[in-house]
Length: 85
Image (tube, rainbow, N blue to C red; front, top):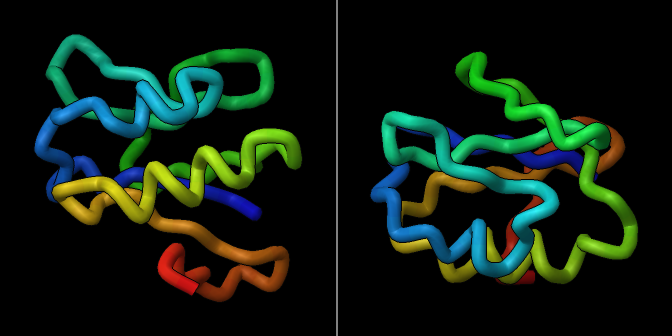
């Protein structure tokens, strides 16, 4: 599974960072971004990162609970994954 954040929809509430700080982090603009496996913040718009297997449930919960609905999940095939299913 891969994840990315649409900063145009991000409300900066920080639920994602609470659920999965290994995957999400705020930048100086107060918006959430994803991090790569080495913990580097990825700030390019639409950049995706792989979700570690042990964090999949936390990332799915973050996407489900996000008030801005800005967290997007993709399966191995590149197709969107609905966090509600």
